[in-house]
Amino acid sequence: MDFGFGSVSKYTTIAIVLVILLSWSNFTSTEAYDPLDPNGNITIKWDIMNWTPDGYVAVVTMYNFQQYRHIQAPGWSLGWTWAKKEVIWAMIGGQTTEQGDCSRFKGNIPHCCKKDPTVVDLLPGTPYNLQIANCCKGGVINSWVQDPATAASSFQVSVGQAGTTNKTVRVPKNFTLKAPGPGYTCGPAKVGKSTKFYAQDGRRVTQAMMTWNVTCTYSQFLAQKTPTCCVSLSSFYNDTIVPCPTCTCGCQNNSTQPGSCVDPKSPYLASVVSSPSKNNYAPLVQCTSHMCPIRIHWHVKLNYKEYWRVKVTITNFNYRMNYTQWNLVIQHPNFDNLTQLFSFMYKPLTPYAAINDTAMLWGVKFYNDLLMQAGPLGNVQSELLFQKDTSTFTFEKGWAFPRRIYFNGDNCVMPPPDAYPFLPNTSSRQKISLLRLMMALLLSLAFFVACV
Ligand SMILES: *[C@@H]1O[C@H](CO)[C@@H](O)[C@H](O)[C@H]1NC(C)=O
Ligand SMILES: *[C@@H]1O[C@H](CO)[C@@H](O)[C@H](O)[C@H]1NC(C)=O
Ligand SMILES: *[C@@H]1O[C@H](CO)[C@@H](O)[C@H](O)[C@H]1NC(C)=O
Ligand SMILES: *[C@@H]1O[C@H](CO)[C@@H](O)[C@H](O)[C@H]1NC(C)=O
Ligand SMILES: *[C@@H]1O[C@H](CO)[C@@H](O)[C@H](O)[C@H]1NC(C)=O
Ligand SMILES: *[C@@H]1O[C@H](CO)[C@@H](O)[C@H](O)[C@H]1NC(C)=O
Ligand SMILES: *[C@@H]1O[C@H](CO)[C@@H](O)[C@H](O)[C@H]1NC(C)=O
Ligand SMILES: *[C@@H]1O[C@H](CO)[C@@H](O)[C@H](O)[C@H]1NC(C)=O
Ligand SMILES: *[C@@H]1O[C@H](CO)[C@@H](O)[C@H](O)[C@H]1NC(C)=O
Ligand SMILES: *[C@@H]1O[C@H](CO)[C@@H](O)[C@H](O)[C@H]1NC(C)=O
Image 1 (cartoon, rainbow, N blue to C red):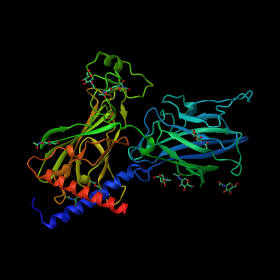
Image 2: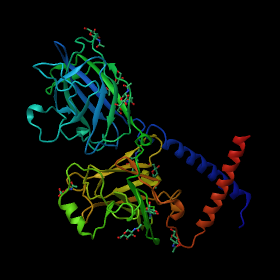
Image 3: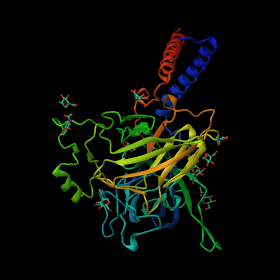
Image 4: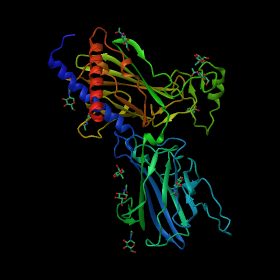
């Protein structure tokens, strides 16, 4: 190898940048917030609509202020602990999962006497007299970007044995939100300005007697989920298809867990598909080497003079799930010059105003917003056309592949970078290994300095 000092310093600079980037990305993965949606939260607002002889009636609304994370079936459940001896006389648009011990009541029996009630949404088709606006969707809430009109969920609660003025009422404590699993942490309730309600004709404004709200944030770290999706790659310039890493979401083990996955040719499949169990949400996946319910395939399809084209395919391997309102978040440096996109909806996400490298993609309503269960119809696809920026564009070193992909807010596992298809007849290998060497050197140097 012959390189002058000039190129060494260039590689050193790149290596330093890489080390910083790598440590940054490792760091953020355990943060309690999402770097691609730093302000994302679910806000739960309690509006006391009127006082009653022994308490109040409140409308509780959950707003999903997250850009791309939604709540899918079987939906949310919301718990809290009463500050005093409150009971719930009645509910509309929701119900508690348990009544608890109401034996001290005679005649009029409360809906729930538990100190720590858990509320769930009612199902679609609930009788009208038990409905309020934004209720009864089985606990499903859309993401803010995809459809703000369906990004909220409400229920009404009549509380007894509670304070009856804004001086004596006590806010509930210890809110817990499951969606449906763990992942959210909720802060304390904060009493704020009373909500104002505007009449539809705009001629009258009313307001709540009292309002408090609770903010819940999601952390992938807390959710501690095993991966649910993976990424595979291919390109026109190399016929290798890089598959999802083996055992990404589980391992196929016929001896210890027969039936953990389904062979598409097995007769058992017919019985699974013909009688989908309504309340079983545990995935039942097609047998693959990765065992993930969802695979995203990124294919670098064509190279034009000024543009290049990518095909993205999402495949559902789960026989038990139709994904409604699915979404993808993809990070790639060329998204600042996305020129055309076919058959998906698109919105750029710019969590850091200066960097425009992240896109949110989702299905077109009534066309492909439903990703059907595993089988011949279980996939959706799109093509993206990017304009090349000659100063950065290259097919080398895996540049044309995405940096990170989320499906429904869950991080999808990528193949290791050294497995990416590469251009034939280039010195990219050499450069990469040189970079590696530099990085290793730098890391050990940094370690040495830190130790001293
Ligand atoms: C929650 O999200 C809303 C909407 O983006 C934002 O106005 C609010 O400040 C956020 N709350 C917190 C505590 O981050
Ligand atoms: C409580 O009610 C009084 C009037 O009755 C009002 O002045 C005060 O602002 C209210 N406080 C809160 C926190 O709503
Ligand atoms: C808060 O709720 C959780 C789950 O319901 C429970 O485990 C915990 O003990 C509660 N903490 C307090 C202080 O009530
Ligand atoms: C929640 O309450 C806090 C404190 O009153 C207020 O600053 C914030 O704007 C409220 N958030 C929402 C979404 O109503
Ligand atoms: C399957 O499970 C058995 C028993 O736990 C183990 O010995 C074997 O290595 C596993 N096979 C694979 C392919 O993971
Ligand atoms: C499990 O069985 C399938 C087909 O029956 C086979 O293709 C696969 O290799 C087997 N896996 C293991 C780990 O033995
Ligand atoms: C998915 O949707 C199709 C068509 O609406 C339906 O036949 C099928 O039972 C659904 N599958 C599941 C698992 O809900
Ligand atoms: C980001 O790039 C897209 C695609 O070129 C463009 O439509 C959008 O306006 C850009 N957004 C910002 C904030 O620069
Ligand atoms: C790509 O997008 C950036 C930022 O939007 C813009 O400054 C640049 O001129 C674009 N490049 C091309 C080749 O369109
Ligand atoms: C395609 O990429 C793979 C690495 O993923 C490499 O092993 C192979 O040699 C490449 N093919 C050609 C023709 O360069």
